[in-house]
Each structure stands twice: as structure tokens, then as C-alpha cells.
Image (cartoon, rainbow, N blue to C red; front, side, top):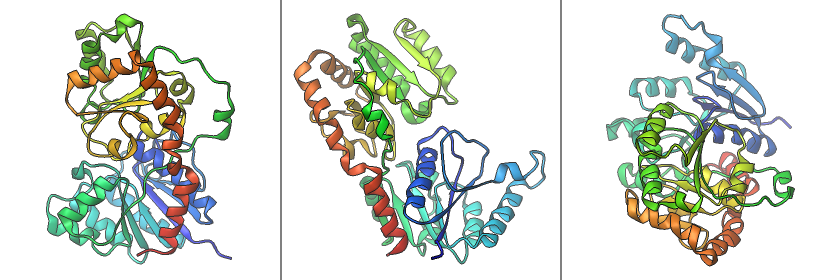
Length: 360
């Protein structure tokens, strides 16, 4: 039996939540019986993937004139030559003319677009008219949270939306490893991007909590364009002894398991995998109630603490609660794993298989 051919088009396969998901999706679709092709616009590869890879950046000289146009032509040729039937577009899509051209490039394929973030500037033109032109007749607009789907339906009245959460994938061997002793560490892991992750709030709440006087450290694990900004902020707040930065790691599972809890202080998200992975590894989470994701994952005082966003004092209080209230902390820790069981790779793979084989 011939396998259906699927192309996953993404910015890259490196150092971001959407990129991590695109890599993970290759495994889900291959296991579901599809022939998988990854097409990346930029030459960044950090995450493991399966299937074929077409790297548009590598196909073109870095000094090539009309580089973006040539990428479009190459993309079209690849889709035709490989008889791609289904395109899943996981990129950011914030340039109207480019997206109109891309719709033309994708012609004669079934198109599925993913919206990874509540920040719609990355996925929709400012004009509702043009948004409807681009998205109205595609097979589905896949949202990574219910909040995103509700906002899209409210703004654009689309009837081709669906929510499929991002899954976690942690190898069985990780769970079989010996139980690690929890350290007095609060952990953030992800992209070092101030605009999205709001490290200013995180660091100021850490100062306000005074939790370092109880022997706690804050560890930031990741990479990104705002590394220097964060270092300067740490210096300014006189936190150099208590806040440590570690480089990006593809699978930071050991660090997550050893942390007392993880923390998220974002201005906005989509469906933050750091929260899901933490809970899957039995590590509770303190997160702000930003749009979107945290409130669809964290049940306050059941598997973590959900705090009003941009409220430094409330965040500092939550940080101290997990340090001081052993009963609350261990209750949340006990509930963590089961609370995300519905987000297993197996469950989410089934939803993707159903969507691609039986679209609306």
C-alpha cells in the first residue's frame, strides 16, 4: 500500500517550541503510516527528526540575488517532484505578500496551517479580509490551545479550526532512571527571549521572594538573542551569586527532575512544552496565567501554582509557597504525572492521524 506523502514546512528544526514540535511531528506521522518530508527555510538543526529533509537554505548560495524567490521556486519543485499530497505549515506567517505566494506554491495539495502562539501578529495579516483569503479554504487551521481557537473563531468566524495540543515525548528509559535527589533549584528552560518570556518579571520576583536566603538558586537553561540583556539584568539586581545560566540542551530531563520546581513568566505563549515536560517528569510548576496555555495545563494547587500575570508580589509569594509548604508541594508533585497523561505521544498522534485521514 502506498503511503500518503506529507511535508512539514517549518522555519527550522532548532531551539524553539514550534521547531521542537515540528521535529516531534515527524515521528508521530511516520508511526501513523505516512511518508514524512521535513522542509526547513533556515539552516538550523538541533532536534532529532525522522524521514526526508529538504534544507532550502543549503540549496541556495548565501549571496544569491532574489534568495527568497528562489526558495519559493525550490519549494514548489520539491512538492511536485515528490508528489506531496499534504502540507502542514508550521512556520511563522507574518508577511502578507509572501503568504499569498506560498498559497500558490501549495496549490493542488491539502493544506493544514498550525498557529503556535497567542501572538497573532506572527500568523495573521493585520487585515481580516486578507486573513480570510489565506485561511478560509484550507483543510484545517490547527490551534495548539483552546484559547487560541476561541480567539480565531471570535475574530475571523472560521469553521475549519481545531485544537490539538502539543504532546510530550520522553523516552521510557528516562522514567526508569534512579530517583534523583531534588535540589534547591528553580529552573527555567527554553528560549532566552525577553519579549516573550519576560525574564524581567522572573528576576524581580526572585529578588522579592528572598528565596536565595533559604539556599535556593535560579537556573536558566537555554539560548537566544537576549542572553546579554539577561546577564545585565542579573548584574543590576545583584543576583550573580544566585542566578546561573547554562547553554541550550536538547533533552534537559535530568535538570528538570532534579529541580524543586520549574517556572514560566511569559507575556504570551501558545502551549508551553516546558510546563508539560516538567509535569511529565514529576516536577511541579509555578507559572503566570498568560495567554495562552498555562491555564489549560496547570490546575492551581493540584499540579502547580497559577499566578496572575505581571504581578511580582503574587509570583514571589508562589515561589515561597513551594519552598515552605511541604504538604502543598508534595501534593502537587504526586499529581503531576497523571495530570498530563492525556498529552502522551500516543494520544496526540491518534488525533493527528484522524485529522489527516478524515479532515473536516
